[in-house]
Length: 404
Image (cartoon, rainbow, N blue to C red; front, top):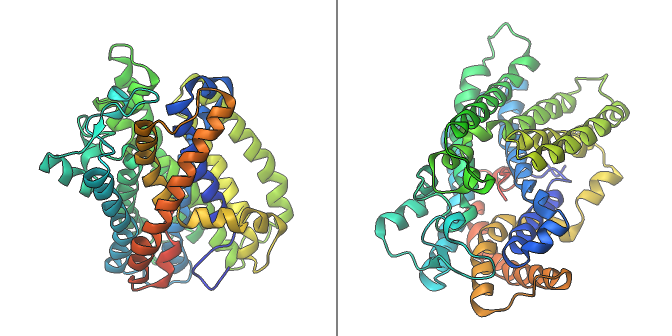
């Protein structure tokens, strides 16, 4: 760990997850036959890692303060950090993609998108729609979901988590409570895990009462079921398991949990990871809403394993491999990559730069989208994101967001 600003081993996996999302969206758009042939739809679950990582990193300062018996982090500073982390980069990218490139969706992308074309995209001119997209509230409405930069729904979910987390900390992290401090620190995660499970059950029940819907429509279409499916109400448990991991990390960091040695963590963590990951794949193939939960459990286990050496003040080969420089760089610029890749897909479709629906064409399409996206992401990261983060009152905020 470098001071208390960056946990070694997290940025590389964040970069891998971001590339997975870019790849699966590009392949689904330009090579849908290859997507099915190679069973690549599973790559879309990489978004769960971002949510689990947010749970880990955003909850970290609250847990550290509570474990040390110190006051909670300033809510004013916390709010400023979270807004600066998301909005400057997003607003600039949306405005360029919309006003300059005319490469945003004017209606729900699931309803209007056509593979290999830029159908349904263009320049958004309605002022209410532009304001809704700029503030990221469009995803609360069936008519607004998956408009603009389609994957921005995850930022809306992130922002809801940012609002809820301090409230949970105020409710549960009370120094005078008679409950054991470790269990008290876990309670916000338990609350979100329960919320997510209830949300999935409720959404599935509502969906069952509707006419048969495809998985795509139920998850992303212009309907109330999809709005619920993309909300914190349903996805709260994706954050919860990263929060469990960070509580254990802090207790190890402070010299507690002595029985949870590195050897035992690997001994029990590795089989648990393989089981939860295999379960996640199986649930995904059935269209279960609990597939994300299983992926989140696997992500939480990974987060604890990869950060455990830092908690004990040492390094490990596994952590160094997870933090290889090229992947770490992609992880650093991942928010811009995540936001740019869909407008770039539309531009590539518009100009016919994509490959064919073959294995070679699939690779070519991903390479073209990745190259253009990375170039644009570097520009917006260094000119917009980095200056905004440097203006934060705390240097720690630079590394304290799990968003792409």
